Image (cartoon, rainbow, N blue to C red; front, side, top):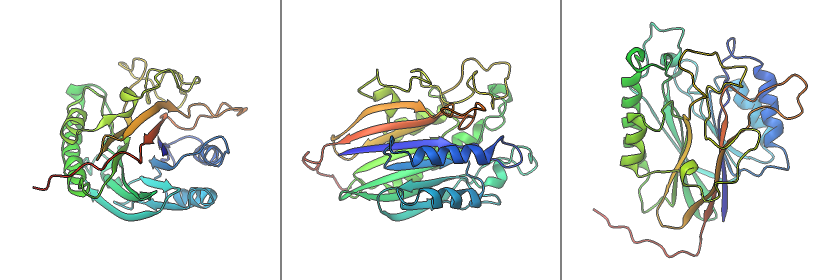
Length: 298
């Protein structure tokens, strides 16, 4: 069985982000295209419930199951769309999430969380977690006043996944979203190490398959050629902070392909881009004939 997963931070901050309506329409057109065949889509920064309902209404003929995680004053921004039935929904709002006096940052009012949709696919229970951790507004550690917030959020994320992904009921666990963590950051090392998650981009089998409009370096944010990105002193070529991570109950799941995608909207006369982030795509293969792994109960 093949499972195709997409994650994208759509940069849906009204009154700040550029060309939101046009970019959302371009995303809708892509999701409805016969050239793509996603099973699960996780979006971040869908700050407007109206935008979520608009997307839901326009793609429901294909992705008939969806959920929007409400939280905080303006919403968590996280939502999940699926071709397959959602049989359970859970969420945890992070207890430490910015400062109320930092109004210009907005994270405090967003009510950042980790949301879970339990999805039933061909008799297999797949736990799909969607999250968006606190942003790093300074990109320089001595000035990064939110580093501790992201580490605490990572710890709560670990606890939530551990408590909701019992090995005897969950066949596959997928964590996707904008973690605002680089691979070398403490929060990311904790998440991968404690939860024993595989990084789809690093462990993909077909490393020569990628989106030629993007490249094969895995970077997803702060790209030099994205007109929506404000340059900063230590920008470099970009960062990899958006992920699709996974673990399986049995040794029967392989990641065949994984790469960033959805950069510039094709054939758009005005040079429209989907977002200030790239999407992340992963193709998994699940061997349904593999023997069940016996779970040791404590």
